Image (cartoon, rainbow, N blue to C red; front, side, top):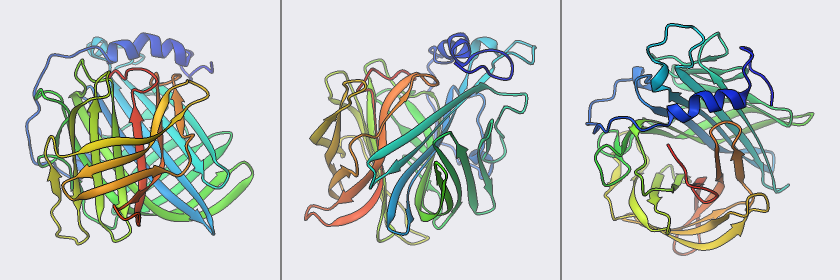
Amino acid sequence: MPASRSGISRRQLLAAGLATAMSPLPATALVPYQLQFPRDLGSHADFAIEWWYITGRLLSGRREFGFQLTFFRSRVPTTQNMTSAFAAKQLIFAHAAVTDVAGKKLWHDQRIARQGFEVAQTSETDTQLKLRDWSLRHTATQYQARAASSDFEIDLSLRESQPLLLQGDRGLSRKGPQEQQASYYYSLPQLQASGTLGLGKQRLPVQGTAWLDHEWSQSLLGQQAVGWDWIGMNLLDGSTLTAFRLRDQSGNALWDGGSFRRPGMGAAPHVFSHGEVIFKPLRSWTSPLTRASYPVEWLVQTPTGFYTVKAVIDNQELDSRASTGAVYWEGLSELFDSQGRLLGRGYLEMTGYAQALRL
């Protein structure tokens, strides 16, 4: 396992900090408040967990790709009073992946480091994230995303084309029956992406459409929840669809929600209430690596329509046990209406199928 610049291995860092970072905090219910921008684009270091999540579809000529870049921040409660600069008060993780649709291939990589020493950095005033040579930066009305591994390289500009979408109750999104099971959550859908995608020695000019989510929370999952199913879809007409559910061990929904927003700068979202979103699996795929079975085709029922979600390729499982400790499925997918017509594209994420997710 490669060593970090401070001389501690990833596995040692994980053992020393991640277990305490994920330990339960006193239950505190979050309350709605008016999110302030650009401040709330930045980090919230007093919260237990936080992530910035960008996914999208890219085209280079006729070649189609999916991409994902996610930065996680985890607060370690037991080190907050330590004065040493080496204390792991915040852990920063990052995942990146590229899907080659025609080649039916997924590449992915991961990073982990304690915050500080110019190795891992976040800002509390805007989205300014860095983890070694990976970064996500916001300037004016666009983001710059960069990540590179031995197999692939992402270098994209992501231009805002729609206003922020506040999920839930003015940005407060419930994730369970208890009030403390919630997050502050906003999205930036219909981002216009352009830049380059590297695959091996190839450098391909690409353009497409992307989606950004940013969430922060003190206690996201209840004890009964093992994972979630989530979609974020950019529709061809400019509309946006979010739908999710949290599951128990038996696969039953513990909570659900989402939103639908029509195009137009002044359009208010239709926010889905608990009980209004139903996920029904239609077809599953079994991972040859973990033997986990993932539904890769879904019927998703919402107040604004019945949809079919289909993965563009089945094998989009990510093994992040060397960083966050989780194995999950996350990949480029297509959205169809009840008549089988293509409505849009986006990402499907499924956690807790290989093992229970603990946040």
